[in-house]
Length: 210
Image 1 (cartoon, rainbow, N blue to C red):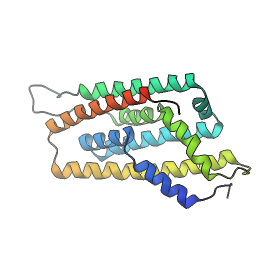
Image 2: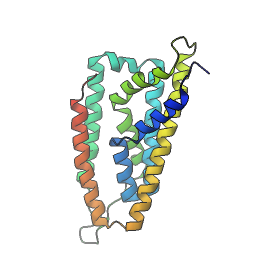
Image 3: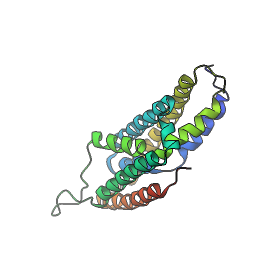
Image 4: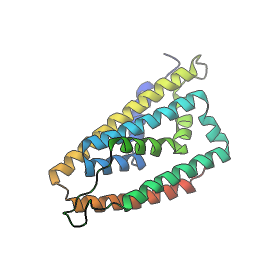
């Protein structure tokens, strides 16, 4: 249907690819561990929204510009890397609400967490290039509605990803609640995550187009 073939293989491959750790998973786990499942789900929804932008852009051919234009790829790459490092600095600067009071880490609004997930995903040009390279392998060359088939497969991939990310958020939140993470540990968790995000930002900035 719609020129789509090997759908079970696509679903399985997409699930395995979504399970691979990266900035998205790291953000979800950090927010879930420090603020609970709702914060983790907010990050998940932001990531899913960012993925939909990549899907629609690829279906419309806009992502092809990133795959073929070194300048466009470089601009988006540096913006994405700068944003990841900006988030890292925010995590590294995590403080107590009141230095004189018992340690508590100030929570972020869910809207800001959603925006973090969205921008972390949508500003990563590697995601756009990935969709252009991966999804067409499961669409017949002679399909009449390739754009529609691309969107359908992209939505399936995104649904898989959101199911996995939601499970990750719930599991992390439940695990942190059971072991009752001390606020001081949450503070240092934010800082460690900030250090990892700096590494990921630098890695993205140094990444190549192909």
